[in-house]
Amino acid sequence: MSGFFSRERIVAPHDYNRWLVPPAALAVHLCIGQAYAFSVFNGPLSKVIGITESAPDDWKLTTLGWIFSLAIFCLGLAAAFGGKWLEKVGPRVTMFVAACCFGGGFLISAIGVQLHQIWLLYLGYGVIGGIGLGLGYVSPVSTLIKWFPDRRGMATGLAIMGFGGGAMIGAPLSVFLMDSFKSATSVGVAPTFVIMGVLYFISMMIGAVAIRVPPANWKPAGWEPPVASGSKLITRNHVHIDQALKTPQFYLLWLVLCLNVTAGIGVLGQASVMIQEMFKDQVTPAAAAGFVGLMSLFNMGGRFFWSSASDWLGRKNTYLVYFLLGAVIYASVPAMGHAGNVSMFVLFYCIIISMYGGGFSTIPAYLADIFGTKFVGGIHGRLLTAWAAAGVFGPTLVNYIREYQLAHGVAKADAYTDTMYIMAALLLVGCVCNLLIRAVDAKHHMSQAEVDGLDDAGARNGGAKLAHAMR
Amino acid sequence: MTTHRHISHNPALVTVFWLYVGIPLAVGVWSTLQKAMALFH
Image 1 (cartoon, rainbow over the protein chains, first blue to last red):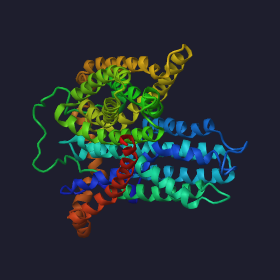
Image 2 (spheres, chains in turn cyan, brown):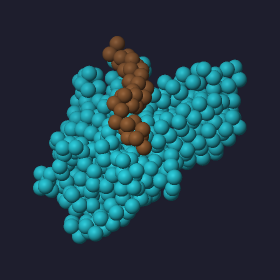
Image 3 (cartoon, one colour):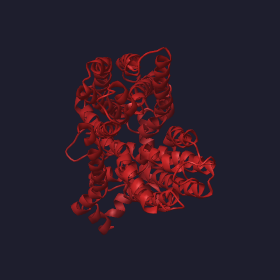
Image 4 (cartoon, chains in turn yellow, purple):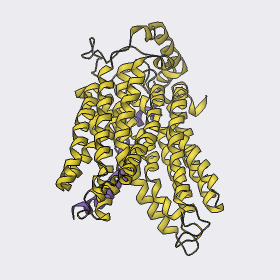
């Protein structure tokens, strides 16, 4: 990789202002977070031919649902396979490819809408856009951890908060554009896809242009890495990405993330229906929509709050809070339903969802603590397969239990009781996995010669060269 | 290169870059918050 995209072009001088890096990461994450708002297109896409109402040849909602599912599946795959590539080529190239895939996915989907070919939407937004999602998600995370060794949790929280907040920008923007382009002969989705594809490409490219990696051996002014770490879990060594897969810690962390996400994602998709069924005469559909909005705010805020708090609490303790507090809250929800206490129900759910978001943003810092920072981007990418698994497992579990309960004559208001207890139990299993996590055995650490070799290669590729050129 | 060095230290650039990501996010949060208010009516 040479020229503008080479690693040497993005190695910052020693006195670079590191606060320029989080907005570069946010510029990417705020765009790809749009994925959570894709459902706003489902209604109009189901009326592309009929315009005012669905025609027989129009796409069904079940057909359209596969677009988002494919995108999330490809996100997981791209993060898992692209993470190692990211460590090799650096964040700028990865962000550029992510921008091309995500923006390009919208453009291909626009053609698909225009020609009414669903496979083009599957290929465009689902596969190509999904690859953009995965690469965009992992690309700035390890860079931020290297820029903020003193506040790893806060740094990853800032970026991953953007993924939670992207839907809040994407949803109203999509609705505004579709309303603007809507006519008697069009639902306005195709031109909306074109505009959004171009806008997101530009915004992600601004992030790619602005991103910088710290020079070798850089550390914040006035900060010294603790000589004897206060926690045995925070290592000063590094574990190679391939070696990490041979440690029990990787699989325990995989379960920790999977179980935390399963508990949150399972109810996130059902939130609107759940609150209306549990409080039948108290919550209107409009209020339920407000509840979903409130949860998305807490999902986003939790990503920053909990991850920042983990810098003080420690990563293991933070996950203990997620699991224990989460289990207590889930076990209490049925009682809130029986008591008709909507306010407490809403409060409890907001806390649960904030910890669900916090789980995503705390995990990269946890990985950096356990495996070191050299390959954290790639290891993080592979761990995100836990997200994909939870994305299937969580909603399936909630839906299956609900259907089973209803089929056996349980009232709708009580159909979620067992679900809540099962979620609480899953969180307790996650708690055990978290408690089992110990420091990685020294046999898995890279030798000093191997680390020096990596640093020398980085410096040879640009660090020293560029620092010299800057002067 | 001197220009590049100057740019990387310009506080105005840092502010502008934060506003670039912060303003759309703030608009999105405000819009979501307005919808969420329906829950309390």
